[in-house]
Image (cartoon, rainbow over all chains, first blue to last red; front, side):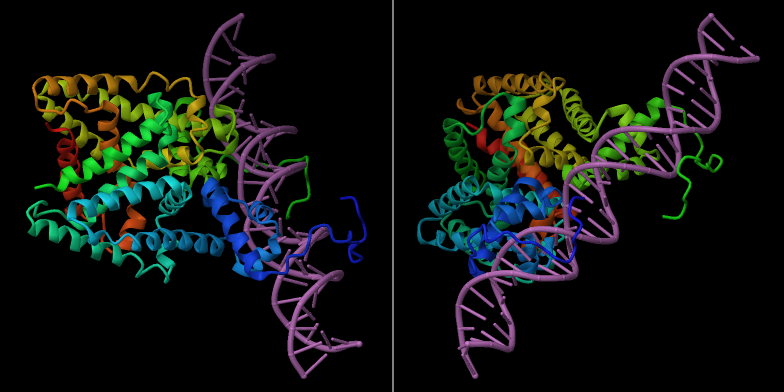
Amino acid sequence: MDGGEKKTVKRRSQERVLQRDPERTRAAILEAATREFAENGMGGARVDAIAERAGTNKRMLYHYFGDKEQVYLHVLEEAYVGIRTAERELHIGDRSPEEGIAELALFTWRYFLKHPEFLSLLGTENLHRARWLRQSVRLKELHSHLIVELTEVLDRGKKAGVFIAVADPLNVYLTIASLGYFYISNQYTLSTIFGRDLQEKDNLDAWERHIVHVTLASIKA
Amino acid sequence: MDGGEKKTVKRRSQERVLQRDPERTRAAILEAATREFAENGMGGARVDAIAERAGTNKRMLYHYFGDKEQVYLHVLEEAYVGIRTAERELHIGDRSPEEGIAELALFTWRYFLKHPEFLSLLGTENLHRARWLRQSVRLKELHSHLIVELTEVLDRGKKAGVFIAVADPLNVYLTIASLGYFYISNQYTLSTIFGRDLQEKDNLDAWERHIVHVTLASIKA
DNA sequence: CCGGCCAGTAACCAAACAGTTACTTGATGA
DNA sequence: TCATCAAGTAACTGTTTGGTTACTGGCCGG
């Protein structure tokens, strides 16, 4: 539009400090992309915005990840690895069955509350019917640990007579996850239509207690 | 790309039958937009796609609604009106308190199951922090009816000694909605990572029973 | 019976977008 | 000490996209 010379590129002398640190640049892109995808979804996220947020430019993003979809896939994988890794350090089997379940419920709720971007990414992925998650080879074995440990805790509770016999591990986890996910991810529409700020501390505390109460009430003998 | 003449527009004689039916065209756009927004979110939805799905063209869409955001707002409003209208016909106060709560839980679950596009729209709206919902004047008074009626049922249950005294109407509704919403809207990632098809009839039926069971268990005296 | 109005069409436009190209710079090891 | 190669930059490109313009044609009140 303004300049005519196409070949002779004039360059201003270095404005940004050169990083020359591949690990750092890659990590910065991934973190910036996490925020961008979480805030805008797959369709709304902008490659330029990710590059700018990461303090680099598009060329590097394509250099490290190939294309937009691959960046998204890496972001999604990292997010799942994050929660499942933290979960592993819980050792819900170390205490009584009731305490174990309560601990898992509390952990899940607090993790969701601390990482709303994870919930947002799940929302985006489900909007697209798990299109990228299904392609991921990395995430196939990640989740079995949770179910195995939960099954063990429930079985101990059944033998001790404190839990009902029909308690299904997956259903118990889905109950915990449902109550946390919906409250946080849908807080904006809910606060609007019911005229109550769900982010207020009192309401958050009440819901935390509610999740533990509901989860235990649903499996107690 | 092919034709050169800019001013002299040549027109093929009428290919599509002229509808000349404003009501129908408007409704067709709204229905097509509902599907497009539900499937792709705000950022992913395409105005051209909506027009094509509606069997019309962009000009009409802009004629009736102004711009993309207004179309989306109308879609969202229609969706909320849909569920709240159906809800009103329930009359959960007509039976015993326990039956009333069970009825509301069943209705909500089945409505969600039948209208996944509503859940998707909620997800999109929450991704954008209720940006459009908050602007809507039409949807302010729509939801109070639900809370009023639920409060009445819970109070009756408390007086009869079947419900606990601390049961909060909003929390009861959030419990019901959480369990339905999460299971359906996150079914794709959940089915993938846990290797169980959540759309299978047996699983759906089990979850329906589970929702009623959990809701009642959490408020029973 | 005709002039203006409104539903409808298709071609068009500028901006935004994902992805590419052509080039520069700094570190390293032979 | 200099050739090589990876890290980095900015300008460019073809396409898509939301939104507009210029036009057509059926219908209805005067």
